[in-house]
Amino acid sequence: MKLIALDVGTKRIGVAKADSSVRVAVPYSAVEVDGTEFEKIGSLARAWDINCFVLGLPRNNQGEETKQSAYVRQFAKQLKHAIPEAKICFQDESLTSVEAEKRLGNRKKGYKKGDIDSEAAAIILQDFLEEHMGKDKTKPKAKTKAATASRNSVKGAKPHKHRFLTAAIVIILLLCAAGGGAYAFYEYNLQPVEPELDCNSNKCTEVTFTVSPGSGVSDVATNLKNAGLIRNALVFQVFYRLNYNGEILQTGDFDLNKSMTPSDIIATLIDGNDQVFRLTLLPGATVSDFKDIMLGLGYEEAKIDEALGKAYTGEFDWIFEGKPAEAGLEGYLYGETYEFYASDPVETVIERMLTEFANVVEQNGLKEKFVAQGLNLYQGISLASVVQKEANNATDYARVAQVFYNRMREDMNLGSDVTAKYAADLVDPNREVYTDNTAVLEIDSPYNTRKNKGLPYGPICNPGIEALIATATPDEEYTNYLFFLTGDDGLMYYSDTEEGHSKNIEEHCQSLCSVAL
Image 1 (cartoon, rainbow, N blue to C red):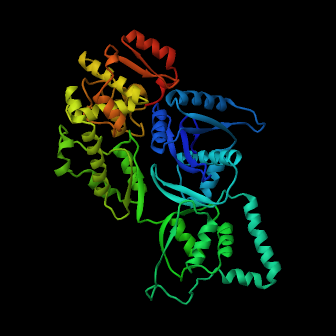
Image 2 (image 1 turned 180 degrees about the vertical axis):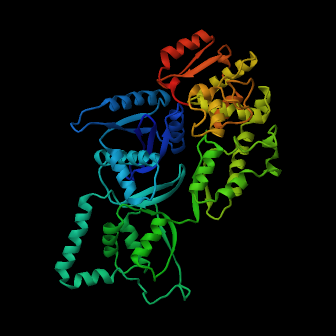
Image 3 (image 1 turned 90 degrees about the horizontal axis):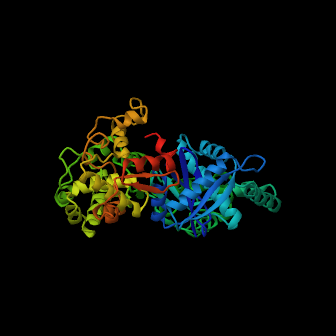
């Protein structure tokens, strides 16, 4: 069984995931509470093929539920509305954010608030796994980089006192068995198999060592011994548990040699195999999000900007139909999970995303379907990007798209708040100038459909396949509706008059409609 854990907050929601067969929780990232959180969580659940959610339920020192507990329970109801097939469990928790920050402080030089939330979600999920599914030895775990880059990995079990006690007992037994020679035995087995080999001056024979998904630390130690890379498997395990028990061992192939100490080997396995990396860009992400991910992967900012500014012509010409020459790649970096070699330039990453996007457009006949709606391909992508940000699920994507077509037919502004937010994000992401919603909605920008009729100047995000298809084939049963909103319960409400829309705001949108843009 696969599970997603959520550490629900009023500003951010920490996300972690796990497979019950592995029983190791993996922090993923944090989702901002901005009105699209259920859409993003739903996208993650679909991408990972998971419908089981574990929500942290806060309790005070007396074990009683708190005001935040009520907030989490209300969130669970909204999540169930947004994802009807969701199976939701609660895990009692207290001060997990404090513990998460402590852990991050111990193993990272720097971290963001979102890292604390995702680490807290991992703690919640790990507790749930251990309470409800039993404890197990060290198992594989996935390690994340930035918002969405990840690798498969193996991690030592959560550092409980009894693990250290086990290691201590082993040492004591060794001492009892060998007397004063036990320490010398331990130190001897922490030396390289061939200590006289100097790989700086000689060409060492590299051994390709594989850490398979599902391997425990004991498995790794045994396989290292069998490969002739360490002297003693038990000493390796003891050394790991005493010194690296909170660290993650990556899975994959590694080039090791017999001049390496167990410490060198563990460091290599922790750092991971940088030959291949995984990159995930979710539907609704922006070019700015893509840039942040690439920076987190170690790419140079100048190289990223240069690649984003290039004209990708030739085989991609047709997907840029209608796009102004000066417009960027917003809307075209298709949200999906990809794998690349670490040596790949940014251009290769972008071209792969463009290829995936072209396949989606071609296979679903989107160009022809947009034309049937009176839009060229670029206009269709632009509208789909707004639909992506406004709606919560595939059903509402098609309804929202139809409402926008209705408004254009009636010569009304699209009136989309998310286009104004995008416009403000471009020029004032920290809201130093546009300090409140009124100012944001009045921003003078060709992207702001609150002030300008017609479509925004271009896409405001990279729409996913569901939003693209829904925009190309809107729900014709909603041809009479001109207004919509997402209520505090996560459901969408539609009306055919402004009066009806105002009533929907009053009855269903007291909190969400006042969230800062």
